[in-house]
Length: 457
Image 1 (cartoon, rainbow, N blue to C red):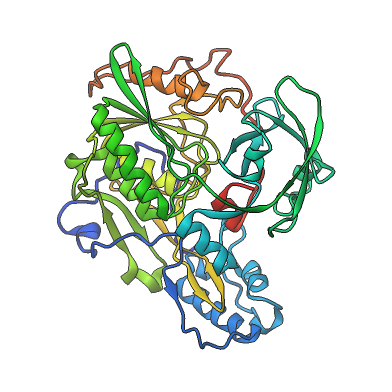
Image 2: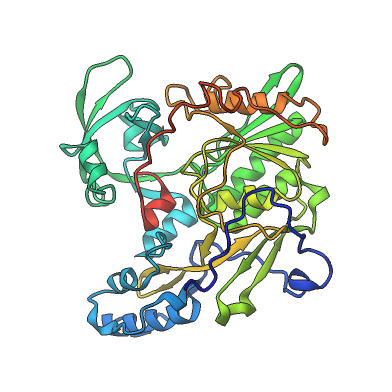
């Protein structure tokens, strides 16, 4: 029996709003949501032997793990050769794909500075089953090799993509994450023949917030903003981006979260506050709920006021199956207050999060809470459904207004030009048409743990 498995609630469910004085929300302390980055460092002089670490991990999991009642009763922590092996053995595997233990230096570099070791590339299967580059990062090995969005990847280190996918080898496909490690890619660039190139891993900087764009459509200014992840550099990126959007006096916004796998929930709250603006100040953004032993940790995060907020009554959000965790929280948190139209494909489905801790140079990130919005909606383990289906068009550049998902978002916004409350925005393709019945893209590479959070190789 799952301790706190919430019932599945679809978006826009009509539930009593839990924000009145008193009641569940009224009795809780207002606090900042815990994020996925480490917030606690244990005594550096603590015993770092495997046996001691395993015993502490098991004790802490019994106390704080969201599904702690699913931990096997007969676990012997001394029977495992590492804390990671113990964690894998005791997590609730039917639901939990996310708890992990990673080197503290790696996690700190990522969340603190946006640094990662690798090739600097995102890739995915397209609607026709070809495995293609989705995004590269400036200054990283993939970008310097001239790889572009839409280029096809046929094999990695001599192993064809179908084999890697069938055997679930994505976590090891590119080899060890260390400086100078060579990775051989068999690729086919647009209009070219297959070729083999060799890249070498190194530390590079990930994008968190792209420079915003302004589309003028029928005399209306529509802002476009790609937010790729929620890490510490995201805060500065959001301030700069919304200063531009506010100065341009945009009337609508397309928020592109198609590859955003989440991160710091506080950064997601800041983004939502920039969008919702003054009308939402002080209102409930999200509530975190813990297991029965940790109810004192339950807390509300609220929208707040900042410079350059847009105060929009509606929002178009581009999503894919890679939109997860804190990016889904933005959608769910805004949904009770403004009209949120999802464009693209159903999101990943991760309505839970973790409060990490660090000891013995390792960061333990286990699922410790679930989230619901002001209407009590949560439990979207099957993802958040879209309002308008659209392709992630890998043959077009991100930010191009003609790209399929962006074009659909523009259509959704302009189908109700003034954003009138009584008027429903519409999709360009009606349900049941031949275009709407196109098979969905195949399931994407299944990533786990810290690799899922980073989302790039």
